[in-house]
Structures are given as structure tokens and as C-alpha cells.
Length: 207
Image (cartoon, rainbow, N blue to C red; front, side, top):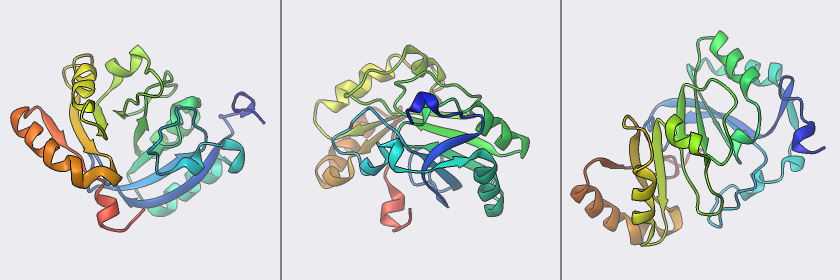
């Protein structure tokens, strides 16, 4: 089954789902139910969930089942991530979550136009595939992963294009954190419109 064959009004390919604490970005520290959709064609070399790339390697779960699992957690916040979640029409899933007064967020590379009325759009652009122009206007949060010295300038190029209300974050790539975190700290001190995002869930040893 190809991605286009999936009837997203009924089901979605899901690698995993879990209730945890958001570890990154604006909502860091907030309890959140994560839905990690399977399927991605961006191909980040440092991706720590490469097993999410192949949607056929994971089951299609019904929206009924997903909602039931979310409600069991009693959460008020759901993060839809991936893979690349914007590859799918998320209208039905998001609307059904909203029916239960649950706030929704997406973590996306911005490479696909988003279909669905999300509450919070975290835009994390990647060099491996160009984002859509829509991503810049929709972004509530720009989160740029720093894994090379040139990434600071690259981050500024994206920051110049997002809307004025967008929150700006620099996040060290986990395996290079020891090298780049001191540089990020100094950069943010000199450019205080940026904030630092860390993968705090990894420090807490939680999903």
C-alpha cells in the first residue's frame, strides 16, 4: 500500500504512541501524548528514529483506536510527530481531538503543506529537502538543529522568513551537543531573540 492509498479519514500509519513529557522547544516540560506517524522522505542523516521512515513497516491504526488511547491518558495536549506527519491529511484526527477539547501540535520539516487545523506548528527545516513557503507563515515555533558551524547562518536565513510572532530556537544535535552547546550559548547571548532548546527527555531517560 502506498501512502496515497491510505484513507486518513479512517486510519493512519503509526510507528508508536506514548504519554510522556515534551522534551523540546516551546512546550518543553509539558505533559503530552505523542503520536509518531510512520513515513518520511526527508532523510536526515542524524535522525534518531530512522525506523519511522518506512510506513509499510508499521501498522495502520484506526482513528477510533488512536483517540481511545489518547483519552485513556487524560491528556489535554497531543503532539503529532514522525517521520514526517504532514505527508498525511490530518483533518479527521485533529478535528476529533478538538472535539474532546485537546490541544494539538505538530513537529514537521515543513516540506509538505499541512492539511488540518493544528493549534501549534513547530517548524524544523532540514537541508535535505526544501520546505514549502506555507511553513514560514504557519510556524508558531522555528526549531533549527545545529550540527555544523554553518547552521547558525542557515538558521538566520529561515528566521528572516517566518512570521513576526514565531518563537526561535536553536537545538544542538544530540551526538554533537558537547561541541556545539557552548557555541549556541554564546550565540544566544549575542542574539537574544533566539532561545535554546535541549532534548531534555533524553536527560530524563524518558521517551
